[in-house]
Image (cartoon, rainbow, N blue to C red):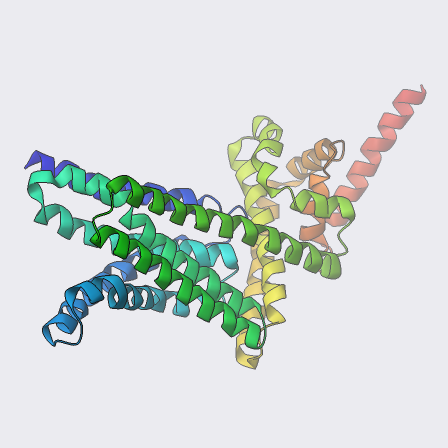
Length: 368
């Protein structure tokens, strides 16, 4: 019995680790954790539905078992997993491509975990072997397929016209086709190592899609912040090096504590989300939906004000003084996106005057 428990633990924990890795690539931190949980829960439900429909197709004589495994199963399963993504991605609080990939990956992982339990319990004599083989192959195929669908639906949300629907069609065809090829390989008796390699290709595809999504989103955010908030080239450069935020904030954590550094990072995330929402307004034609999105933007601005008060002027002054001397003007990315995002620029003048006086004092000291 202990072997079964170990196998079930492997079948549950390793897929979660894969999901954690993919979610960690949401560098802007705009994804919602509760949406990931909802995606996983739906993935489990999708498996239970598919587990009823697939055998029914065989029993009714509509297709052979082999055809269901190789063709109808993948088509049905990718469609079922994608239903939750249609709901999440059309919400006004959805953000961008990386979020779609993460939610899709979550749906696939939820599907795979429930399926794992059935296979592990049904093969108790080789439970650990089954669990390990599945988490590094079949699980990644399920996650990659719905992740691709999530990316495609995200692009549908961001694009306009026929091009947006092409993303959906091609994404679904690719996800289903990728799944079909894998099932055909496995049902034909392909060695486990090749199934694992194919699973690795799946997670690699999602990683590449996320990296590409980050690149595209940096361009969108830079453009919107530049248009709306008069951000300088240095400020855009800071945003485009979001991968280095942890490194850049280390001195702040040492001086003021990790909590303050996390608040600064959260503040940057909120302003990034404002830029993303502003970009999505361009592809949102429903008046009610636009009004709802504008309310979200107002809420984000309010959260920014609260965070700024909690961080305090001394910590913010430290950020500006330290990072103005760096090759990347991190303060420009923070201050401009906070203060100038509101037309009143509340609080910006205080830091400007304080910094000016500090620099003036330093100059006078050098002259003397």
